[in-house]
Image 1 (cartoon, rainbow, N blue to C red):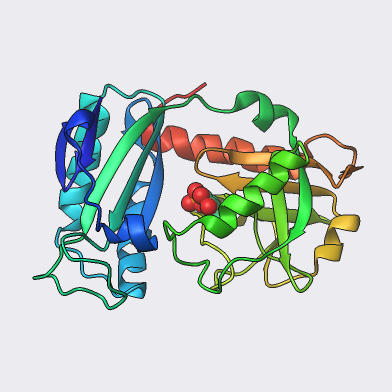
Image 2 (cartoon, rainbow, N blue to C red):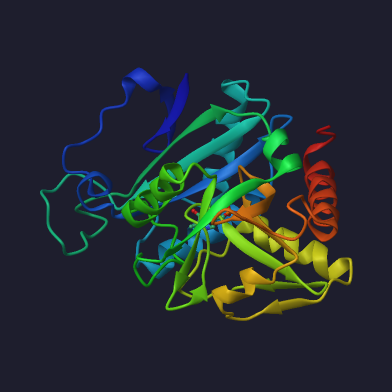
Length: 286
Ligand SMILES: Cc1ncc(COP(=O)(O)O)c(C=O)c1O
């Protein structure tokens, strides 16, 4: 299997992670996950926008161009003959000098770009039938808008879902619904969508951006504002959104059914529109 390592495509066995890599020691870096359908990268532009914006937010100067990253990703998918799956890639702030909290200069240490591909089919069963979730307090940091490789908060949250034997957690900060551990959450009530605004409390998910764009085209009203977690007690539909999960209905929260306990009509409409958006970029997937 080939991988991206230090901006080149090499055999995985050739990779040697530096002991002093800041990604390894501080979790100092950012990452992206892009879905691949029919060997094509879906919404690559939006993911690269987020990566380059993220680098600016954490004051990391990137020593490569956007076009260079695009070319590497396309080549990696091609050499690994990936049809359906995803590409993971990250940039750590670099290696070469011993652990020091101060940012290194580019002359001292170069950001390390790495990445790999994973074969993964669409999660059709869960997308069709829906999944469960549990509510937990959001204990992460205050820069959830940065797609940081420091994921301990998300890792701890995700494992609460595992303990409860459900797919995902729905997090709240002082009663305000934020997002899942690896996904955004949208609530449907009385025909409108409720979605947390893109601020520092959530990651501006690319799947959410596509879904909201499709919802606007369909004339579905959207409330992009903060709202109380109590909305879940009377929600008609709830769904989670992420690159690998797509639009996945949440049919049960804390053991209680949402609506009729089956995927609702607005969720299904948006799922259909989302598939059309994928097919528009990547070709037929069903
Ligand atoms: C915390 C968090 N929120 C939201 C998302 C969804 O983002 P995207 O749709 O870009 O995959 C993710 C995806 O990994 C995530 O980790």
